Amino acid sequence: MTNEEAHELSRKRGTSRLIYGTARVVLSPIAGVWYRFKVTGAEYVPKDGPAIIAPNHKSFYDSFFIGLATRRHLHFMAKTELFEGRSARLLSGLGAFPVRRGEADPDALETARLHLDKGRVLALFPEGTRHRDPEQLRAPRKGAGRLAIEAQAPIVPCAITGTDRLFNGWFPRPVKVQVSFAPAIQPSQLEATPEAAADLIENQVWPEVEREFAKLKANPGLLAAIVAALSAGAAGGSIAYSNQHKKKPKRKVVVRRLKRRGKKKSNNPFKR
Image (cartoon, rainbow, N blue to C red):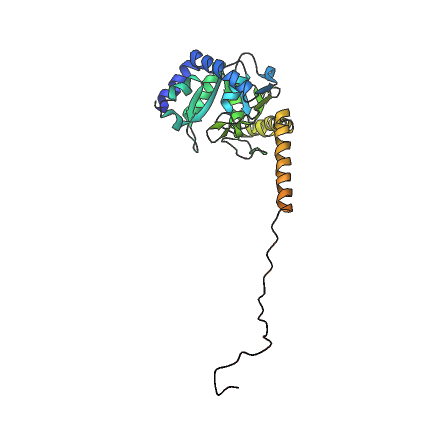
């Protein structure tokens, strides 16, 4: 599927009810049981009309968990390379549309605008790309603010944790994934200028995201806390055992030649 075809399909159809609904039915039990998926503040997502959800970004899977966290169908950007294979139609049905990374992409912006014009929900990551640091967030960009002002769409600050530790190689880890929404921020009476967009994101939206993120990090869940405590205890015990059983360095053995009490009798007739 070409970029043009992917954008055209996304603008016209949005999500596929069949694909989106099937994915939700299949993934919701897995998320709830294996990842102990927890959602708070879902009531802050508007029940109808255009809206932008502005989460932090830790993993490729962020959009899918946020999609499970709200009843409304979510639309989001994904790197254009993902639409070159057989999964293109599946991704499109799940609400994804392509964006070229590292450069301005007017096609992606136009698709985003059209989704908002049609009263749909967008997930836009203000950080722009995934941030690997598990404890910190990257400084936000103003693109989501500009779109919100132009469409007069409320922005819902959102934090997500746990998605950066979903897998150990190919094996899924039983980590806790949490999503928390904050009350929507209305961009009414703001002009669509770079300064207003930056102020909206940097001074109103992002502080709420950071606050929700800090709450989630401070409350990882009972099982996660127990595992962390056991891991810390095991590590401490291992260090103590290692120190107790640490091999002492071998002393250098100094070999000394002992003087013989008597000289050996020499066979040399000239030496007496």
